[in-house]
Every structure is written in structure tokens, then in C-alpha cells.
Length: 238
Image 1 (cartoon, rainbow, N blue to C red):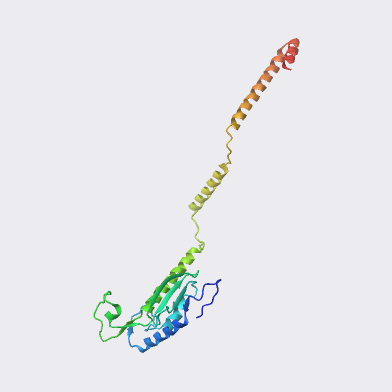
Image 2: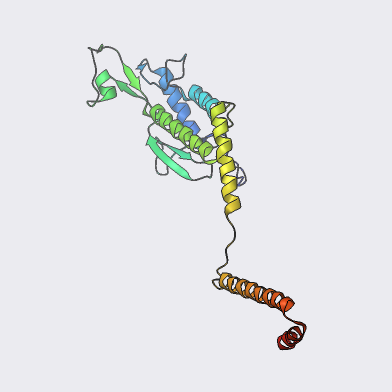
């Protein structure tokens, strides 16, 4: 697998192994095939009994085909027998790293699992058991890549449309709430603070009303006055 320098696409195929890492993994596969150990790896693909990278790599490539996050396997500087497994997110930033030996550990059940693990029963001491820490690290790296993929999906904010219809009561309730909101919006009138406008209109209204009343009363009284007094009243009003 070759790494292409393409800044526009950071998805290199989800699983990347350098040339030096591939050489070391092929040697580890030959050592696994030559061993008579009974391997207890949980990450061994179904239908297989020994931890061969040539088999597991094909399975991981298929599982991670749609994942834009990458798993990179390389040989660290200064070492020739160890492998570094790194996970990179879809933007190209390193997320996690593991450094392990690609060769499996073989021995008795206690030598393989160590003193911190409780073993039930009495395992056969004549059987050679084996376990690969490299396969465990690959399992952790794949889990980390899957977790990053789920976070990517969540960050895109995909809208999920529901085909479920609401009951009639809920539909009526939602319509009432919508009408209530619309009526509230209509009642909201832009307000400008003009404290004396109302007072001014009130005073002008009263003045106009009183002037009209005075004019009406003057005309009414003038109609009842004699002719000479009407002329005098008209002269006074001028």
C-alpha cells in the first residue's frame, strides 16, 4: 500500500503499512506458521486458528473500507523488531499510538497470560500456548478508528426524517400553539418613546372640542337675539 501525497483527500485506504513494516510482518507470519503453539487470540479471523497478518489485513481493509480515519503501521526509528501502530483522524492528526512486538509470545498458560490473570482449571503443561500482543494492539487501533468514524458521523449533523404520524390530539394542539404564536407576533408593535405625544393630542382634542362648543353656543344664542344685538355680536366676534 502506497501513501499518496494528496492534501485534498486524507483518506488513504484506512490501513497503511510501510515497506519496512511489511517485511517484519512477513517474518512474523513465517514464525507463526513454523510454531506448533495453540493460539488464544480473540482477534484471529473466523475460520482461522493462527494469527497471520496476511489474513487479518484483508479482513481489516474490508471492514474499514468506508472509514475515512486511518491506521498506520510502521517501524519506529532506532528499532528493527518492533512495530508502531498509529491512528489518524480524517483531518490527518495522530490520535493514538501503540508500540508492540509482531512476534507472538509462546509458553505455558501462565507464561502467556502472566500472574495478573485468573486461570480456571488446570491447563495441560505439555501444551505450548501462544498469544500475539500485536493482534491485541491492532484490535485496539481498529476500535479507535471506528470510534472516530462515529464521531465524524455525529458531527455532520445528519437530519433523520421520521415517518411516524402524530395523533389527532397532538396535531390539534400543535395547530393551536401555532395560531397562538402568530397572534402574539401580531400584537408586538414597534414602540418609540414619545412621552408628550399623547398629552399633546389630548390637550389639542380638548381645545378643539371647547372651541367648537363655544362657537355652537354663540351661534345658538345669536339666533335668538334681536336683529340689532345680532349685528353687535357679529362685530364683537370679528
